[in-house]
Length: 207
Image (cartoon, rainbow, N blue to C red):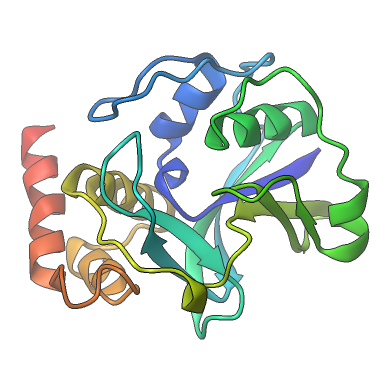
């Protein structure tokens, strides 16, 4: 078993279910094929990663910028940890890379050296970021650093998904969520904390 740590839309457990079961989440433009093993995670815990999150590139699923993790950024990145099998992690990673799931990743390099690049694109770099309760903690991000890429603000639907994950996983208020997301590079100066908090509260009223 290992911990898959998400700092993006998969912080929302319902969003992650689409990677496990397959299907298109509300507001998304792409359909997920699903994992070979659709079993729910054995455990789900709030988590924090040393470093920070920024928004860049253009999401084919949500439009707008995607969230990426850079351990060199100051601060801490709010995240959520899912205890899954290596096969499930491999299939989730494949879907994030827009590849077909179905093949187990060889995690020897990332567990030995802390980093493994599977390709040049988004989410194709695996990172080993410690252990928790005796299991390795893994996430994935882009091969570049936050300083090396043009930032792109996230779309409202994507922010709502991140906000839902932060509320669900960390129990944060809309105001705290707004302050956190609005300060991230790519969102800063484009989205205000108040506007993001409004997205959260409007979503709560609709549900």
